[in-house]
Image (tube, rainbow, N blue to C red):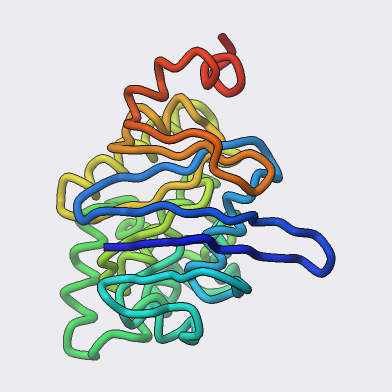
Length: 233
């Protein structure tokens, strides 16, 4: 579904991504794990067209994304839920969800909205509430729901558990598993390696802009080097 080959990305003089290559197959959850500054979020921004690689190739569903505008990438079904939620704070929950559907035919929006509300009943309860007054967990649900309104073929989630209490982290990961079981392919960037690897089909470890290790989620969960570096043991 997604093939990333030898991408190199700079922030000015800083070489942030150094020849990363990986694949995501239809129906998988693929996790990118690593420490802060490893290049995880930069990778997602490059895939969604917010940053550009100077080399290599990015192919999604047979389409070359290297020079495609970000809004067209969304139209093709590659949808990015960014780090830090990035909801529209002064708009209502439902207005935020409507914004996620900008690329969709108008006659599909109502049915998409009902699907999102079925997945996130809390959002339906708060659909008239100003988004900035939601709790952190509710804001994360809203960010994910807004992404789903674009009918993603592949949903990219950037640090969905960031800043959440442990019980909310578990809820978010239950939602990720539910989305996957419903047929959504997911590329997950997550600093909580334990949780990410527990749901991942496959995973890649990033260190200072490079892929240093890859395997199934279960293999990396029980890899001694990964355990020492990211799992506290």
